[in-house]
Image (cartoon, rainbow, N blue to C red; front, side):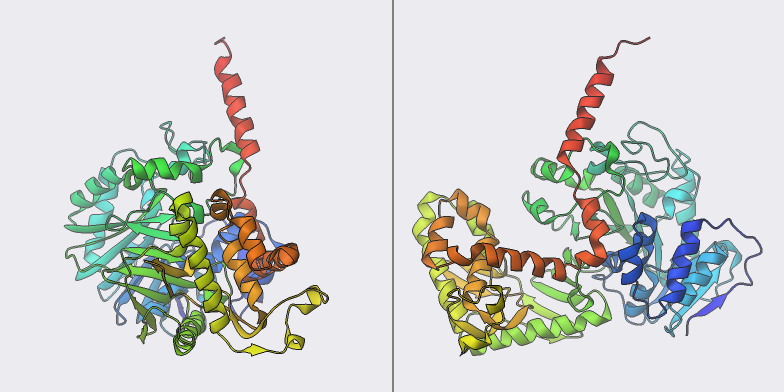
Length: 544
């Protein structure tokens, strides 16, 4: 079990009510499942420390399986468990005895965790470490000091704890992050517009160029910048300089803000301009920096991470050179990895073109494809592509019918939604990811990938509905939406299947557990417009 070490601390720090409540949730939910607490408690701090979504920061990251890790500032252990799943041993350190005890209690079943209460300089670790992890630590070490010198000196001191081939991982916000330009509050002073005004609270935010200066002054010779979005706290994507985002990527991004009252602009609509003008590395909301004395870094160039789903489907899709990998963010997601591999094999056996894949070391490996997805092709298609689109949709419909043997109508799992409707062919297994987002399209050929979701005894018509529904905006722009509804007899059941899909999506995305996150992501354009009007009014006032 995780071991707690307290002999290196002789001071106590005040404990807030929310910290006491978080500790209580950890105590009463000894199985580590905090769904009940997240459904009932709407506070940001509770979500931040207990949500599985936190694991996305390192759920895609590769480290040596024999790695010895030191996590500085572990808090309540939100990241300690995911580090322990990837390393041989984790020493988790926090200056608060209360938080250290809670972390040890949270991971009591883990044999490879030691939790230390105290300051780093007071603990005589007998060994050096392969990996040092500091999440939201560097900004706090000098109480907001504007000079870069103390931050460089601190990082330089960490070299004494790092093996010659070791890595240092730093995560923090970017002072020039787009969210701050849009009115987000500074996490250390609670001032709007972050630290763009020059106001500094209990922590100091850095730009990319300042961090490069700090790392160089600290003596590090190699570094790699990752750009977690919407930020390092709850990442959905991780980009690098080797794989910067496409202008349209924000369509799949959910920016969020627990305190959106000062927001004046929706950051999602601004990313296209930021990307097209090569400003993304300077204006990414946050950084994850990997640095050391050698360039032996994680090979991941790009990661798309799902952590708001059922645990078995919390999977990261990573690009590494000439291949893509599906990685389990947490151990329970291995079930989802195997499900994808099994479904792809079944579709191949049914005669469909699928991306080749291989299970190796707990990851699903797939070759990188030069072809666009069918969804991205539809996004850029024009009226001259009309015939090609209709032909591709017809091939998709044929593939759906080919993907599984039919079963009697009486077995229809959706019949109760409308017992008198014509549901058409009922398939023994419906592969719900047979949609343009999960199909490579090239010269009319459809190649399927990412087939994790399936449903027994389901209408083929529902699968076709999903393919059209998910691309309704593009198809409507092309004047094909109504035609496809009629061609595949979707119109009579459209509203019924729409309602079913919304409920399925809510269940899959666990809206009951993560409802507060989706509330924070639903920042009101009306409120932002009101805030802009308020600023305009204030700006027109005469100085007294």
